[in-house]
Image (cartoon, rainbow, N blue to C red):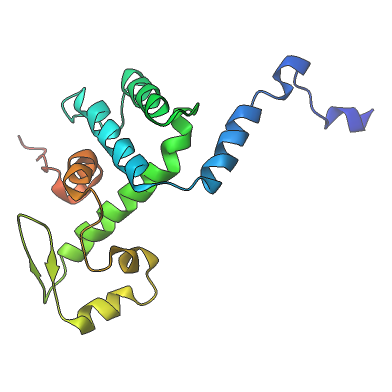
Length: 166
């Protein structure tokens, strides 16, 4: 009797309710993104975020539906928004890492292109042990202009600070 208490208590209809999500997660980890798919994803994410004038960090339900529908149509796929999570997180990590590198001392940053000009020694010190920095190949991350618009709200340093006295 005690063995049944610790078993699966979900009704039969709910037992496999996460199979689609698990399958999507497994497929997402093996999915090989092409340049065109990455570009399409970040542009669709930009469109979804712009639906609220870039005032929200994440797209609304309507924005997510827009992304999924257009991506599926463009690449003849049948995926859900959760599938995009890892790739969007990769874009966000690259954004944050590049922004951090841009605040370093001993470098020059082009304000128009966000290109970092630094010595080989400076780059080698940052590339050793950091897969993300190495992946940049000393260039801003791909789709930088779009990525900046999309993830600026995730950057606490770019947020205006409100005083409690105002």
